[in-house]
Amino acid sequence: MILKTYNLSKFFEGLRALDGVSISVPRESLTLIIGPNGSGKSTFINTVTGFYKADGGRVEYEGKDITNLPPHKIFREGIVRTFQIPRPFKKLTVIENLLMPLDNPGEQIRNAIMKNWVDFESEAVEKAYEILEFLNIDHLTFEKSENLSGGQLRLLEIGKALMTDAKLIVMDEPLAGVAPALAHEILRKVKELCDAGKTFLIVEHRLDIILEYADKVYVMGNGKVIAEGGKEVIEKPEVVEVYLGA
Ligand code: ADP
Ligand code: MG
Image (cartoon, rainbow, N blue to C red):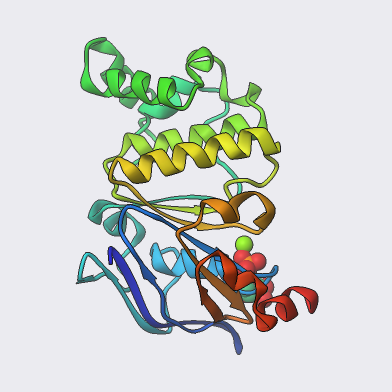
């Protein structure tokens, strides 16, 4: 297992947003977390990646305790995440966004990019081109990010994650607002990346599209894992019930 949580808990003023969540993510595969709105999926990701402090429990990455490390340290361990709402630098082109260091955005944006562009043969630039080709968005290399469609922005988010050498890529609703054909394309790329050594932990509620790609599924309800297993878990009565009750 590349990632394990043990009884992970997070409370907001008495609300048990995460109530003892234990999951295991096998390496080089796609683990999917589903569940109705408000069931704690984003809170789980935020707590695992250090954006929220856990109130209890433990997070282990590659056997190492990373509970409550700050986000930049968790990133350095090899975990990269995307957000429910993509946050590219809109005025920058696609390739410029890829060349932005993920752990250190902010003041020195232009400097960071210029440093990479000075040497056109630099590894970072070459890697960026390879990723754009792999994701089939190389025609958008010099497009300003603000002109991208919802689906293209998601691909850019994946591209940014791939620019890092993170082994575990955690994504919060990567298919939100993405047309079905492009969503399937994104997921096919995700599976190719699993075969190439990456691991994905994805929160998503568009089951109709993503379920067939999942290697392992966790279902959350009210801050707890209520079911886990293969794709067939969605047929369990407790899962049907939590969705109907939502
Ligand atoms: P999901 O991603 O499954 O839709 P969330 O993890 O966003 O659910 O939310 C789980 C619960 O925790 C919800 O009741 C939500 O209102 C609450 N919650 C999430 N983040 C915060 C926060 N920063 N402050 C207070 N309550 C929060
Ligand atoms: Mg959410």
